[in-house]
Length: 230
Image 1 (cartoon, rainbow, N blue to C red):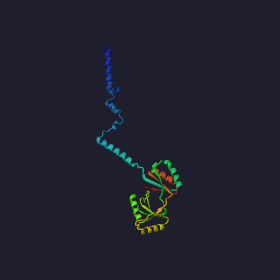
Image 2: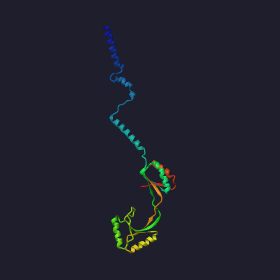
Image 3: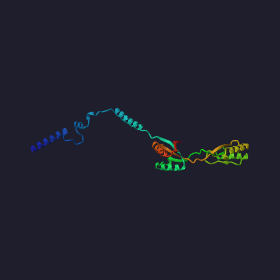
Image 4: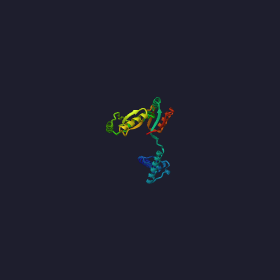
């Protein structure tokens, strides 16, 4: 019995000694400080810095990231690009080539203004409203002028009064002279332009990549030119 107690005490002491040295690991997840320090990587190179230096380092990192983002150039965006002039057949072919770009309402087509005089109009300038035009028409009737027409379309001459359209400028000037003899003082003569048969395309929100694609398509039409538009 005494031998059992003796050897039990020896075993317990040996176990305590081993635990104290760290030979048996740990029970709560905390190793003895000397062993933990030895297990760290490059423990001798670790340094404690102040909160001020840590904040400065964070600010420097953020500034570097911001500078890198600013260095990346933003894509160029143009408000509008117009490509023309196209005869009808070429316009249709160009429109077909545009289809894969899926531009939707960023793309539109319109007729170019005419540049040939087709006739001459004798007219009184726009009166600002239907009421103003009616009032001016009443004045004409009072002067004995009955051949007139109030223009109510969406042209620049809306609410003006037409006093005749003539093939030649000479005929229009003769009509103006006759009206002045009747007391009409604000009539004038202006050429009327023929409608153009040429077409142009306008593109909105054009970035650099889209501009390159449009120029590649335009190159297939020698008479077509591109320029910025509003």
